[in-house]
Every structure is written in C-alpha cells, then in structure tokens.
Image 1: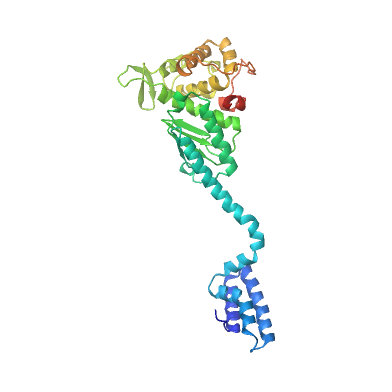
Image 2: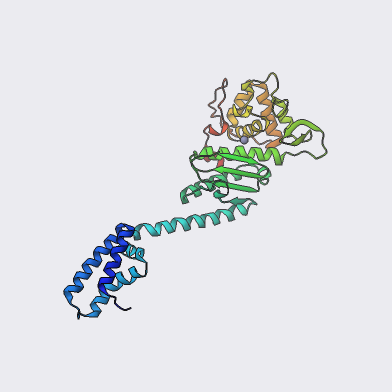
Length: 330
Ligand SMILES: [Zn+2]
C-alpha cells in the first residue's frame, strides 16, 4: 500500500463531507485534520513507516469508498454485543422452522411459513416455540381420524388479522396476540371445520340433504346433515322455532358450519359445561349426542365437573372461554 498526498486526501474528504452531510464523515474528516497536523509536524522527510501505520487504515479504506467499514471498526466494541445476537436470532428462527417442518411432516402435515399468509409475519424464537408446541400438542389431543385430514398448516405471527381459517384440508392460525388456551381453542375450532368437511363425508351419488357447502350439495348419507338439521332449514336459514339458547355460542348461530365447529370445540374442551347445558335444552342434548356418536366414537371429556356456566345465556364465541390447557394437551 502506498501513501498518498496528504492535502489531496484532506480536500477530497472535505468535499465528501459537504456533499453527504453525514456525521460519520465529519468524524473521519476530523481525524484526517488531526492526521494532517501530525504529518505536518512530523515533517516531509518523516518516517514513512509511521505515516503508513497511521494513515493506512483510514486513508486507504476511505479512498476505496468503504467508509462504512471504518465506522464499523470504531464501533466494534459496541456492536459486538448486539450484532451476533441478531444473526443468532435469524439463524435460530431458520433452524426452528426446519425443525418444526420436519416434526409436522412426520405426521403428514405440510407446515408453511407464516409469510405465505401474511407477508409481514414476524416470529421470534419464543413465539415460534410456543405456537408450534401448542398446535402440535393440540393435534395429539384430538382423534387421529380427524387430524389425518389436515394437509396444510400455516402459522403466522402478526398482532392482528383473523385468528383462524379452516377447511378443505387446510388450517391457517394467527399465533401472536392470543392467549395460549385461546390459540389451542381456535385450532380445535378449525379442526371442527376439517372434521365436518373431510372426516364426515357422504357419497357423490347420495340423495341431496337440502344443504349446500358453498356450491357443493351435502348428501343425506353425510352424517353432518343430521347435525345441521337439528337447528337449520338450509345453510342460510334457521328453523322457525330456533332460539339463541339452542346453540353453544352466539357464533354457532351464524350458519350450520359454524354451528358444527363451535359445537365440536365445546364438546372437546368444555364437556362438563356442555352436559350441564344439555340437561336444560333438548336441542343441545341432541347436538351433544351427535358429537359423541358420530364424531368422537363415544369418548367424553371434561369428566371432572368444574362447570362454571350460566344456563340462561351464551358466550359469543367458544374459543374465548378459558379451560385447563394442561389437562387438554396433557
Ligand atoms: Zn369457523
């Protein structure tokens, strides 16, 4: 590396400082002024080795247009605390993504990155661990005949947006800004849709039941139609004598498919409460017995009667009613 004319470098640095008006360049310029004074004081015939030692790290890097590197060098002591952590967090997230992809893949589920649903999905290692572990455990706590119908799972990490979507073998769940029990309950609700649409199925040539699942006619040999008929005339119209208390939640009264998913959730997570409500409502008793017979192979849940439920009113949404998450996921 050769040393360069001192004044030319000083002038160039001054121009750069004026044109860019950046703090770090001013600092560099300030250093160059000091260097220039040192050099002038040391004389034209001063030891070039000293000049090289002093100048090289600053001048050569600056002229090469790599001024940022100098700033980095100066800040090494500070940045060494934070920068590796940033790299570690990113690589930890990538490692966790790979780990959970393999884990879900081993049970036949494609785990897709949250950015597939929301571009701004932004997990932390902790939020990824919590969400993936709860969803994986919730799957294990549901009948395998239901969960084997799930093909694609997307967990996304944003503060807002729909908490869950489910159907046609696919579930999308928001992991951030929900309680842990609520996250599990939203997943169970979406599994209710999967179970309704893919586990209980009729034949193509079966007789029309009177219900359409979007454009697709539901046939009478699809057991779901027996459930829908308890409270509904069609996918948009309730039976004329239908009452709010005939549903496990207000959201269940939206349409027959939400009725199914909410009732599925209530049956699996709030067994004791459901049995208490069923004692005072004939249609809820029918819905309970339907879930027991056609969906859960006679298994019943919430056997410890801790039911704290008001028989005379319903929550808006089954997924926001607290329950013992540890008991559910074991
Ligand atoms: Zn739903």
